[in-house]
Image (cartoon, rainbow, N blue to C red; front, top):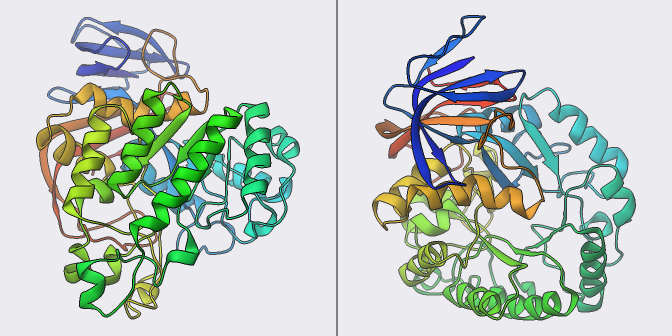
Length: 423
């Protein structure tokens, strides 16, 4: 395959090279002079006016498989991922059965082989997500678990968590934590403040997140573990991570979701349960603090927390509907608009957040940056406008349905094969 006349964004050299990208045997054979390369099999992509970068990696997705496949499965989740420019996905472990054993982990990996992209999975920290007994870390890593998380459920037992962090440090894998003290939450998914008061609810206060983040940063400092603080929602959390990293604890990381840097709690008024997620959308001050955290390197990843639910579930009352929204298909567009265009983040920084830093967390090679590196590539327009009015996911629970987006994924290539093409 030859990708002709593309502007390639190289995050390693912080340069944009207009070139022909020649792919052979699933790898980058060369970056050639524009419009000069020839492919022996005659497979070409005319990328004139388009940009290319290493394929994106999401470290926080829920494909609901096994157990909840009416919402999503590994195949449909991968369709959404490819449309979003993702060649690598790390799945969360809160399935049914949970990924706390080698059999379920093997099921996920075997099914992922048919998707055309790289599907990885975390295992749970505790058996059955109950927070009572640790899983067999050695066994699960041996069978392919790339990290450990009870995402969706906070780990309240401090002693147990410290033991888990010690084990993750020994295995050199990250532990990813959902930071919400459930004892402080009245109703999840809605920020405690003006909007919760409007609906007569206690909601989920910022203190629920802040208190556990404080605790877990201190344990991470003690143990030296790679700590991934998931879906940061509060300005205070950004500052706690900033302070820890400034003190030299650069093994402490934070995720920003597209919805937390794009929306505030007021989205609940317009979109109801389709703007309900854990942790909740908070204030404009929090949103801007998250953007600043992405700007200055405090927050290391854009992670989607892609969380499909059925239409029927989301049509329940605000109180009864489950938390979570889908996000893989629009993460790039929201990042381009809200961070690059509106907040002056460089395109190189955006690619770091989507492609480079996620792989570094998991000690993985960044593809497509030099000759003979893996040909996992996303090709996109930075100017095309489009309306997000359809999905390749099984579910369409999102406050962004019908929104006009800037920047569109045109092709996703994984292992030198075209796995998505914009229709």
